[in-house]
Image 1: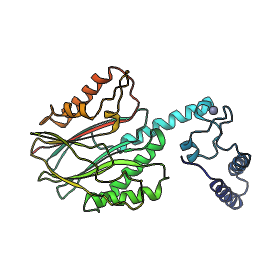
Image 2: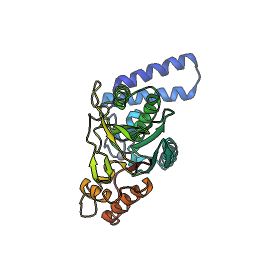
Image 3: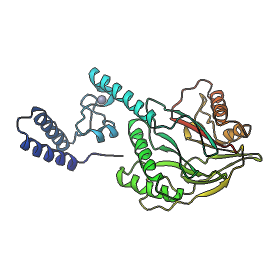
Image 4: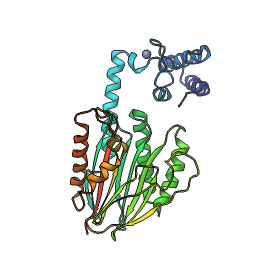
Length: 322
Ligand SMILES: [Zn+2]
């Protein structure tokens, strides 16, 4: 669990004092300094991070973003709740803006995905980047946890992969570097499972699976899975990643999904499961990506029969067209 240390608070106090010395007579800085002092006093008294109304711990990821918080989500003032709601809506818009277009055709491949957060924002992420050389890179993942902290890490991964995809030659090297950068800049309890792939115009697909739900390959002779080739990103600083090479014929597809699909539970607590997904996908060979994804979602809805969704859900299909 992530925690804020009193060192961080003291560091903040020092910086505020320096800023105040440079710009005396700034009332906001003075007030902020008082709040930091009050937080340090709470550390000394052993009440730091506890809600002043209910005495329960304030949500750790919120406290990490703002160590001066004094109330849990249940005990915000009405104004604070309205501000939070507005911030979340903005975050949701920004996050949707990071996603690729839902339908994309490039370099002999058609792609479609469905991205559905459990609340306003999601820890799921997908991206598709056609490169000039004729390759199509795709990235697909799930950051541990849900909500705002997961969403921030999701946008961090998005930026990392976008920056690396132009430079790296193999998907395994790409994931290795992304893992180091993620590990350097992220607190240890967080990790991400992801699949990174490169689809060539010749039908050869290189897939690195960092601890993610095994994607399905839909061929004329049935479905098979692409098992993990390494640990989730963020597990250890130095981790080697391997990759598998698949060859897809025209009409074959690769289907990626997050556990929001396979671990969805109906009202009797029965999981949708990978076996049912495999049976459903076996009926979709040759279909357009939008119809493959649509078939999965329809079958999931039939299983759920109106039960509430509890997790972020993303499904993506990539079909070789020629
Ligand atoms: Zn409270």
